[in-house]
Length: 119
Image 1 (cartoon, rainbow, N blue to C red):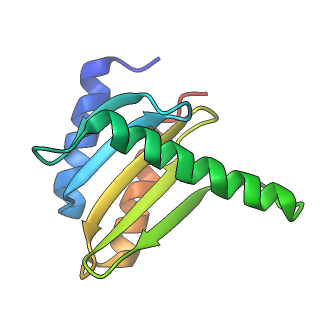
Image 2: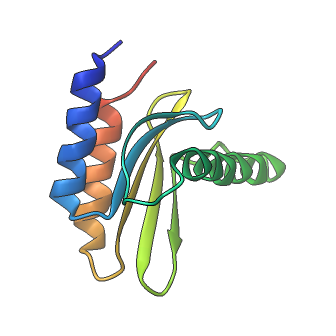
Image 3: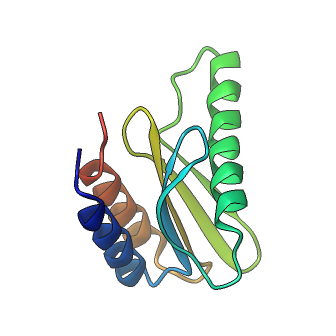
C-alpha cells in the first residue's frame, strides 16, 4: 500500500495539473481516503455520493450484461466531475471547470488513477 503522504501529494498535484476545484481518492464503500475539497464541503457526504453514483453506473452496466465502467463523467452548466476506477476498491474523483480541456483532464485523471491503483 502506498504511503498516506504520497497519496495526499498525488491528489494535490492532480488538482493543480487539471486546475480542479476538487480531487479525492474514495473507497467504493464511500470512505474518503484523501481529498482536496473546497472549504465548506461536507467531505463525508461528497465521498458517499460519489461512491453511490459510481455504484449505480456499475449496476446499470450489469443490467445490460456489460462490464463495469472504468469511469463516469457528470456534467452540469459550470463543472465536469470525473469518477475513475483506481483499482477494485477505490475511485479517483476530479471536479473541473466546464471550460477545462476535457482530453487533458481525462488523460491526467486516468494516469493518476492508474498510479494510485490499490489492487
